[in-house]
Every structure is written in structure tokens, then in C-alpha cells.
Image (cartoon, rainbow, N blue to C red; front, side):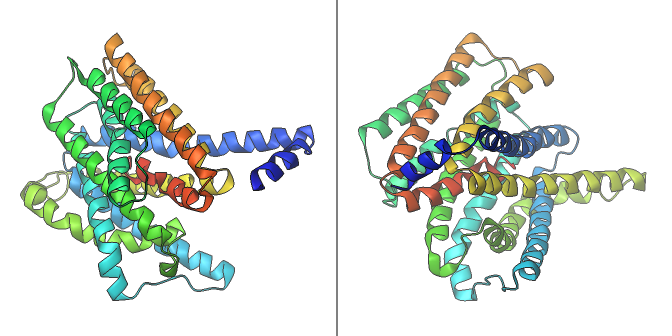
Length: 352
């Protein structure tokens, strides 16, 4: 009923209003592309020179927490209403599992950039849809349908074709990003459950990010100490530097990544709130193509005809998944809106 009213309203709009709406949507999509594509290439560029991906991720998490806190203060001043702060019992029981999965997803994603190309990362990360479907079925957030089996076959088949006899394939990086995709499936399933609980009051992504970052930092810190601690303590880029200006430039560059990561989450929420989750999903599909084209032209990533065919098959599966989600939203509009918000997988992981 609401959709029919919306269509009727659009039909009654003058041409200039329709044109403005189109231009506004395109502007929001481009705004989202700037952060999403930008942070992918930023991470790859930085990690060629700075081989501490977990430390970089910790800096980004700290930056996101600071900016989320500042945003909450500004929102409180503007609205005059205090933002939600969860009690410790709910915080540790309900937020901690999501934070742990999110931290590992982002950390392993960034770590994989040390070994694999942007094109292989982008393609493998798209398989997160498979894990999201699996855990949605496991937690009974989704019903098993024949069309979902087709989605799984298309995406997994496309991924196999993309990696088959790839000249730039690296086993370590592939395993890392595939593990990150699996954790991403857990992460976004838990995030969906977290944001659906109205009593928690975390429907606003700014509040969600604010509550997640401290636990994410603490979850990733032991892994960082065990893997990169010794290397960082002897790194000439951080402590045993010869030029303080180089170290200041490095920390400024790391801070820029934090700004991009925060901007990615904000731009996704803005796009969803002003248009729809379907718009974000469709924009995400075209973004994958843009990333692959840029990677082949700017970074020299090599892709054969079989790789491109595998990409097309995988994108067909993702497109079918979006179409099924759209059809399902007509039956369960409220649940679908929440699920579409959780398309933040590109996400912060594509933070990354």
C-alpha cells in the first residue's frame, strides 16, 4: 500500500523535482563510492610501505570511536536528547560477540592486503554473501528456498572461476580474506540481531559504532601484540626513526584511513536513509566492477577472460540475492530495512 502511494506521489511530481531527486541520489552514490573505493586502494597503497596491518586497524578503530563520540555529542546538542548508553550487562553479553567477529573480520581483511591483489580481494570478499546466508539460515533469520541455493551456486562457482589458474593467486592472502568473509557473515548476522533489538536502542549506526569500537580494539589488541608487537617495537618507521617528520607523516596517513573508515559507515547510512537499502545494494554491485577496472588499470592486476567470466557469474548471484531481498521486503518491510542497513559489510570491512 505504501509503495503504491509512493509511486503515485512520484507520478505527481514535476519534472524538475524528479530530476533533482535523481541527481541527489547520484550524488549520494558518488559520495559513498569516494569512501568505499578510496579506502580499498588506500589500504593496499599504505600496506606496501607499512607492513603492520593490525596496528593500522587499531588506529582506525580508535579514530572511529573518537569521531563517533564527537558525533554523539553534536547530535545531543542538536536534538537536546541524550544518546543511549548500554548497561555493562547488556554491553558484555550482547555487544561483545559482534565486536569480536567485526574486529577479526577487519583485521584479517587488512592483513590479506600484504599478499593479494585488490581484484582478488574484492572478488573473494564478495563471497561474504554466502556466509551471511548460511548464518541467517542457522539463526532462522532466513528461510531456505530453492532460489537461495542458486545464489550460493552462482557466487561460489564464480569465485572458483575467478581464482582458477590465476597468475596472481596467493594462498595465504586468499585464506585470510576467505576467513574474513566467513567472520563477516557471523558479524553481519549478529549485527542484524543487535540492531533489531529495539530495547537496546542501537538502531542508529553512530551509536552502534560507538559501542562496538572499544570491544573491537580490545579483541584485536592481543592478536596485534602476538603477531606485530616485536616488529613494531623495532620498526624504524615508528620508534627508531631517523627523521621525526617521516613519523609524523606516517601517523597523519594512518589518521586519514580512520577518517575514510568513519566516512564509509556514515555515507552508507546516509545513502540508505535518504534512498533505500536496495539502492545501496545495487550501488555496491557496480562498485565491485569499478574497483576491478581501476585495479587492472592503476595497479596492473592481471585478469584473464575466465576471471572476468567468473566475476560476471558471481555478480549474477549477488544480483539475484538483491532481487530476492527486494521481493521478500514486500512481505516483511521492517525486517528488510534493518537487514539492508546491515549491508555495512562493505563494508567497515571493506574498511576495510
